[in-house]
Amino acid sequence: MLVRLLRTYLRPYTREVSVVVVLVLIQTIANLYLPNLNADIINNGVAKGDIAYIWRTGAVMLGITLVLGLLAIAGVYWASLTSMGLGRDLREAVFSRVQGFSAMEMNRFGTASLITRNTNDVQQITLFMQIALTMMVMAPIMAIGGVIMALREDVQLSALLIIVIPVLAGIVAFMFTRAVPLFRSMQGKIDRINLILREQIMGVRVIRAFIRNDFESRRFESANYDLTATALTVNRLFVIAFPAVLAVMNLTTVAILWFGGHLVDSGSMPIGNVTAFLQYIMQILMSLMMAIALVILVPRAEASAARLNDVVTAGSSIEEAAEPITPETLTGMIELRNVTFGYPGGEKPVLHDLDFEVRPGQTTAIIGGTGSGKTTLLNLVPRFFDVSEGSLLVDGVDVRRQPLEHLWGRLGLVPQRAYLFSGTVASNLRFGNESATDEELWHALEVAQARDFVEEMDGRLDAPIDQGGTNVSGGQRQRLAIARALVKRPAIYLFDDCFSALDAGTDARLRAALRRETTQATVLIVAQRVSTIMHADRIIVLDEGRVEGIGTHDELMKTCEPYREIVESQLGEAAVA
Image 1 (cartoon, one colour):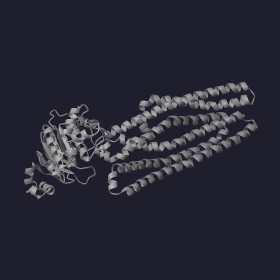
Image 2 (spheres, rainbow, N blue to C red):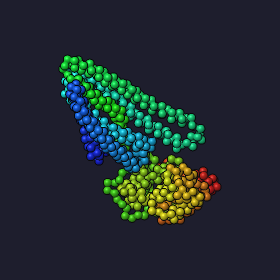
Image 3 (cartoon, rainbow, N blue to C red):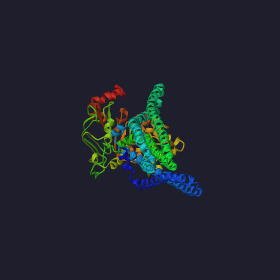
Image 4 (cartoon, rainbow, N blue to C red):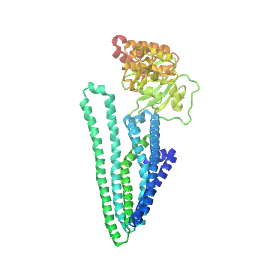
């Protein structure tokens, strides 16, 4: 999976990777040449007392070392450029893909996991790439070159490699096979940590209100301990591996000096060649040490690559039509034709055989008990979900056939849970219409009954808004969200129980102002309170996903028993009578 991901996203950096490979190749060849020069100094300079030769050869070695330093700096620069660019592209790819996810894919991956994938997982790939472009390229070249140069020095002494290399390769293989599952498990446990932390931050008031601080602390400690235990298991693997490798290297050094000393004593090998051979063996072993160091990164990078690939290759259940159709007449009409919808994996449909129209210039309200499918129905209009059976038309064209941006451009949605973005009041209001003037913003605020409290805020339209709108009350958030939809001036307004935090007086004034403001638009309101929707032009009563009645308040009071029960439960028997 890691190779596949890199093959895809490294394509734009072919030139940079090639430069790094060439620079590392030159460095490795120069490093392999230095022991040979060192042997010449010992054999031809020190042994013969030729000081001039020592100076000349030493100067060459010093020059090569300086060039190596410059090449190393250039190599690190290009490697960093490539790895950071790769990280940027991966983050952009994940972000873009998530933007196209439907609610179904968001629920499948989870917010905490998606955040981890776009931060920690990308960081693991970036770190791996940074090291791989230097060490991973250098290690095999140095290992192969070192073997060739060692054989060139002495074939008989090189027989030690037949024992040493398989031992070290076995250590590397053992580390890799044991570490991959552990690192994959660690990434999942990091997801769990993020999930718990996110829940505790967002639900801090609920936790305190129910005195669950100790319980949540234990829950976090449990997840944290689980992650720590896995990390310690991984570290113990490397604690065993590195001393084992160092022991092999030291024993190899002793063996070379032992057998090499006998060869020098017998006159079969000059002492300079023994020194060079020892350096080549050390280079071979160092290349294997690099491989072991990479074993630390490869399993985690492999696990992260698999997780990132799951996101960037995930298809969305909501996709653009192959041949999209843009409606010719833009009226704002919504039509449901025998619509049935069930969530994937659900035992039965949530909505059953819905067949009605939501007409422009009218306010249509949907009311029903908890779980009757009101919000689900509203979510079908912007295609947060697709109908299971039947068809839902906007402006006479099935929403599944329309370009998504065209459809969304016609809608003004105020969700059940009003969400504001970090910035200012003005930046939030202009979210759907960047060219809106200050006068238009104030007008929208006035209609949404939000002008008074915005005028009292420091900075007024430039007053800061925290992430999620946590620095304003629930009712103020709802009114700002309504004003945001009004600034967009869409053809269709979708209000999903967004008046619940308002007092009765503010609710009444807001509904009256909305009626005057949206005379030409299609307005669809989902509400729990009868007082919010009793003056709507049409009221649709849902019960367990089925339409139990359609009409005005007065008509439904006469013909629809479920509606009468809702009115009686909220307004009392006097309202029914």
